[in-house]
Length: 273
Image (cartoon, rainbow, N blue to C red; front, side, top):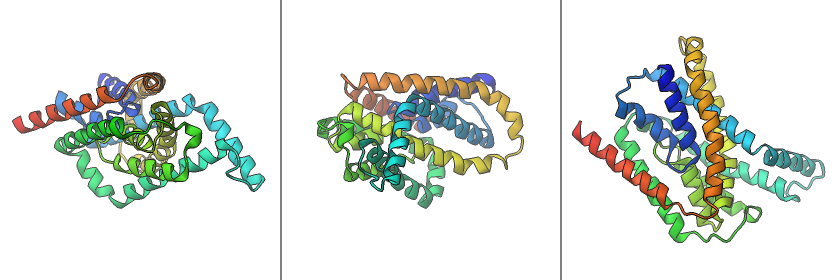
């Protein structure tokens, strides 16, 4: 991987991690469409590290929210009333919402890895993302705020996130869809989706981290990757801020159309090879 490739992929990761268009799909498809022959070991290392860069961005963006949740959760445990404060209750609900994706990811890890190697599978899952976004806009209640989320909502959103372990199914798209189908307003659904991405991304990074040290030339790759990681963190932060503002007044149809169009383009390109 070159410096230019790392920067471009970092920007793409930052743009697509939190927009409902699937970052994993773009990290698979961009090298495929541009004819880049990046060694699988390098691609694995970069994909893990670039996810960590996006994780840092979302933690920084929601630092005040996270601090409030942690303080409230600690007070609740000390006072033996863990669900008394809204912030503490939200923290426990975020943990609950994380469980389904973790269990599913461990159960079908090999199948997911095979999907990452197939541009056709990615294209199909992009169409799935498009369908979910359209479903959310047509069936979503759009009445509830974030403080009104209950355990049933959190579990449903968590199950939606579990689908997003496949490349092409947007994590933010799936979780925003899950939230809207449970009656959350678009900005509230997006905010919950971004917050619940933190534990699952952290867990995925820790699990993959032990594999990084076993890859030959890991330290040699880091200087090449660093510009891409910085680009990913900055663009991820800006993408979060932009999408939260966008969803206050606008719908998800533009993202659904983009996913559908990209999926069809990939199918055509795959069929012509």
